[in-house]
Image 1 (tube, rainbow, N blue to C red):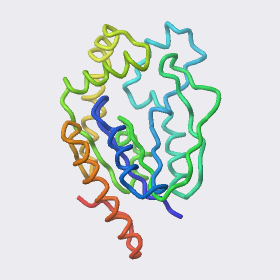
Image 2: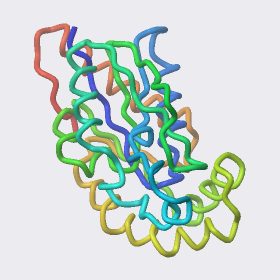
Image 3: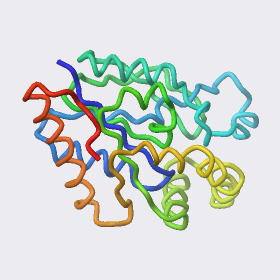
Image 4: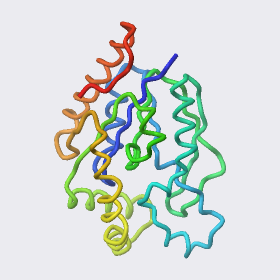
Length: 216
């Protein structure tokens, strides 16, 4: 089995995770797996806590891109993997990895999915999710304060110091590689339907003996 790899990129808080999970749920049961690229943030457990928080988490090198590409390649070949489990409160990996089963469709979501060449070249379908900066900041604020132990002031400071400039440098330009662009501010069901339909077309093309290709 050769899996169909779908990359879903976009700015922090644009709605990538919701889209990936929505598409996985819209496809037949057991057909899709979701792989969050955020799980591949480098383990900073060896550093003092005060040094960890000073790291730039909004540049591609913050991820272990080599392992991410390797794991995606294995999933593409129909192999199950064990992905890292990352604790965003401590910026360290947890000791036990998490299994990801082989599936006909693998949805890889994360801000740098289209910005890392070794990852991008493996993808059969590349999706970019857009959203305005106020929307992205508001969503990031809700997530980081509610789930990751941050303060409102720290979220705003990090967004201004790192997230905004790194978005402009690395994330926004990667939209040029996308086969499909959807809005993270429209009804989720609409975006799910558009991406799901494109996936079905690619799967049907494969059943007919054609090669996966971008379908702009």
